[in-house]
Image 1 (cartoon, rainbow, N blue to C red):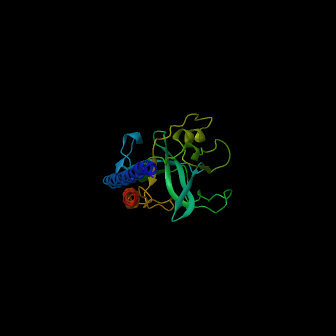
Image 2: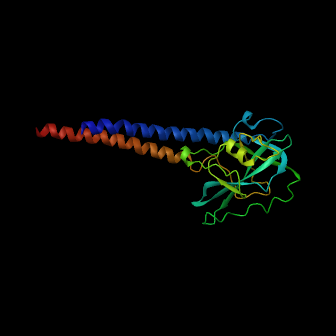
Length: 237
């Protein structure tokens, strides 16, 4: 029993501390998300990596509605679907990937949603507003699936790297596309989008605080049981 207690006690304490740290991280993320919308600013020629995460920006460019990506493993209210990622050619030639929102899946992997009808004339220059965000990251590299570099569009991908997107967009005329390091989350008020209502996380820090208290409660209970059971043994002896 002593060995079991000494083994489990630090595990319970560490798990509680990890969950508490996750809660504090979400608090900071929420604060950054709120601060990012304080002032709209034109992106211009600045790289997205030089601006803060969740910065609200205005961009100009041309849609490439013929070559879109469907970001897999995205759920809303328990329903599986995709985020629609559409390339936007900025005035200076860079590519900015715009997350136009979430669409539900059909339930069949081979039947992809129709996402091109609302874009109109791809030659038109449009002005968009949104906020910058990092690309979603997988917990393990095995969870990644780079988009295909050949075949029909749209192309399904899961947790891609920017280099994966660049390879998929490469053509004979543009062998090394300059893809921006961050996504643009299309503002809720902008047209040509799907379900958005952006938020920095799915579940708030309250859940992590609850988990932390549970793990620490297990640690306290373990100590109490150890003391009680060993005290009884000494009395009987």
